[in-house]
Amino acid sequence: MSTVQAHGVAGHHADAHDHHGPEKGWRRWVFATNHKDIGTMYLLFSLAMFFIGGLMALIVRAELFQPGLQLVDPYFFNTMTTMHALVMIFGAVMPAFVGLANWMIPLQIGAPDMALPRMNNFSFWILPFAFTLLLSTLFFESGGPAGGWTMYPPLALQMGETFPMTIFAIHLMGASSIMGAINVIVTVMNMRAPGMSLLKMPVFVWGWLITAYLLIAVMPVLAGAVTMLLTDYYFGTSFFQAAGGGDPVMYQHIFWFFGHPEVYIMILPAFGVVSEIIPTFSRKRLFGYDTMVYAIAAIAFLSFIVWAHHMFTVGMPLAGQMFFMLSTMLIAVPTGVKIFNWTATMFKGSLTFEPPMLFAIAFLFMFTIGGFSGLMLAIVPADFQYHDSYFVVAHFHYVLVPGAVFAIMAAVYYWLPKWTGHMYNMKLAKLHFWLSTIFVNLLFFPQHFLGLAGMPRRIPDYSTQFADWNLVSSIGAFGFGFAQLLFAYIVWQSIRGGAKATDKVWDGGAPQGLEWTLSSPPPYHSFEVAPEVK
Amino acid sequence: MSEWVVSELTERRDGLHHAPASQVEAQQRRRRIRRTALVLALVAVTFYVLFIAMSVLGVRGP
Image 1 (cartoon, rainbow over the protein chains, first blue to last red):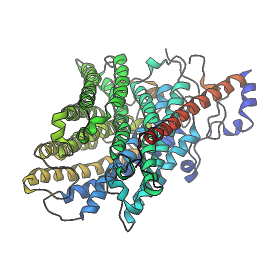
Image 2: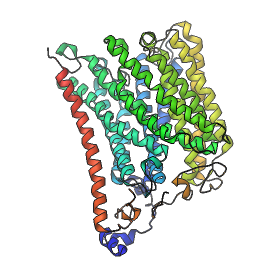
Image 3: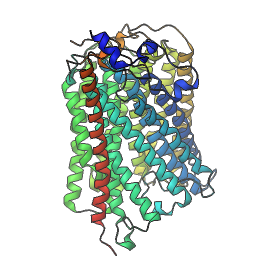
């Protein structure tokens, strides 16, 4: 009965399309609507941006290798710091997590695809255009944007001809993110397998669901802020120009209302990844699943009421300082719950240290370092000293590199055999881990000392007293950068071939979740029959 | 969610060709997906307009 009706609804094309595989050649990718293909494109795009953004960071660190101006002029240096941030945030970290979401959410909730596959295609293909637009400004006579990724007015309003390009690129990135977020929410809310209640979902899916709500709430705020910059620049408005009755500080408030949740947009999916990996290699169930979910939700809520801790030094009433200081400190509570739960999961577990687990444990330690320095920055009188110093640079890089980026690498090492059907070279992956961990600490830890000693951020030259730690930091940067070539090689090798991965991949471990019930690699159309979740 | 089965998905050119259990169920499902997506898009647009509107009110004028 249902079959007859099915053909009536599905239309006459249904038979012709039954069990077809991917399209051949470029059409498969340009017209992709399959979540696995789009996920792959997101991940490869992110890897490319990771190297482009990394190259910019290396230019910055090469210039800072010793005092004095050596390699680049100060304007280009500022362009590099600005572009590095924009490329890494919007081009590398966010698309990497969207790629992971595309690959894993349908597999983890037992759905055949994302709910809105065409929009999925659109949201990906916007990105290469956005970044071509942004990166093309480097070839302008006036140079690329150099006012910092925050684009504070009035400095940003002096950008010149790159200004509209940058604003348009940011609008495009925002639109892409919003579409991706809508897709995630709609998929999770409507396409879960029978029996999979919300509190049975893997924590990675939970992390992403909450992230998607954050994205929908704050990306339009960024879009609003840059739209107002645009009208100030071209249409004579005075939102942020004091001369016309506007207020530059208002921009900072609006920007950081977006900016702080943005930090959690880059870290909540990472929490999800780590919550998948640690139980697998501890051979235990995740300790405190419910509290993990509530902690993610609590962090997401708190992220909306802490924004002004980024701008204590602009001056605000004492009550405001107290509120934003205490609300910021409050974030330590749910974060502490998560750290405790991950540690408790490992406690008395039968641990093994495969590459994903190594990266997850490194995440645990080093993200905590970033969290603690964040607590230091939350203290208003201390922040007056730390503000705009290298201490801040050290803090957020600890959160984002050994935090978010390590979690992405952990995720790739965890699910890569599932995606490609081949195991990768474990020895090389462990080498990659150790090189990354050593060099990332060499790169960012000395920046705490530099900041505490008074070195300001965003400067191409510095006093000779800062020379030693800058040298160490630059050596760390080049070591970390070159170690990532190994990562690209390991991934490429696994795509090309290698030992066949089993369906469960981590047979010695205890992987849980629907993705492990599928073959490695999973069929082009997975879960054609809905799995039953008990 | 428990009433839902994968086979409800309607045909798509991308190969999501699962036959719906019934025409009514398929339509309901499509409507639910569209409705959720539209509400979320509306929320995004509202935030965009809201923050610009708040800024307009915040500007004092010369």
